[in-house]
Image (cartoon, rainbow, N blue to C red; front, side, top):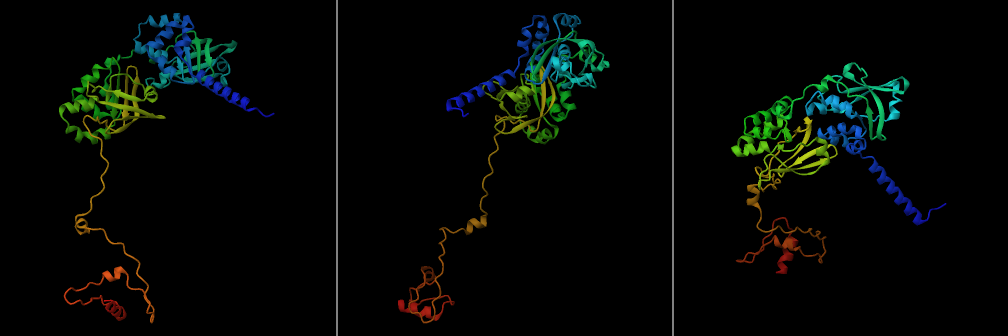
Length: 412
């Protein structure tokens, strides 16, 4: 049976609505999900306080192992720093999808899941992985792999599932981990230049240490800081130009590589636009534009374009990224002009004719013998011959035959 045009249009519209609906349902907000469950409010509060909630919302294919208020109070009684709490809760975010059904159908009964704590690079060895085991009687156990896989917590219930996007489940206890629970220094204790020097940005770090800009960086750590650090070979090649700047210019250029807010790599990939820097002040813009193309993030100024090549640190409130070029602010450097067309060589210019050359016409065919009606020489041929004003004699070039000579004489 053929569909009528109006039915076809209706089918297309319905398909579009279903597509939009399916796209919408794939997004998630962990804060809103947990807000429906008051018994998980403390866990929810600390996900927000540690900025883990934002990171969870940016990821897909993920499982959040929440614990109730009683379990969280037991953790808080130890008075860990907010940065240690973030590490501990990061261990409870699995980088894979485990719905209730999958937990009871694990291949070979055991799975080892990577976590957000492991992804930060802070965890070493087996720390940062969680062992999940399907037990007898329909129970599922969870344990930090660094503890030889000892199952210290168990599955309680499924909180909410958006298949293969996010699964929020409740487990009975906070997973113990000596690595995650280790005291974590606050951001003001971070050695920025030390981190840079140890990971390929030693030249930039040493230059920063020798300038007044270092204090500006340190003063912004607690409130949030993002650093774009040129790689060693890049900044080393730039040093001659750097040394030619004034003292104020040197400070401004170094501060130009810092942003006074925390910007994770995920945020930079999703947000384009103009970004102020530590050097920005009033009318002195000192800003650049962030643009992304897929996984590549570029920083564009009027004078140069740099690409982020690596991550040295990306943990609230500080992020440090390596870049493949030195950022040149337009306030200190002009944009490179296009290469001009090469000028003619001096000799060529001197020999150039004052007037354009005449277009050379095709020579007339040579007349056959006895042909009295042969055409006269072309104007170009005639131009090759000049009259002498004194005696009226006609000159010719020696190549022309006598017949042509006499024809010209009679024409006179």
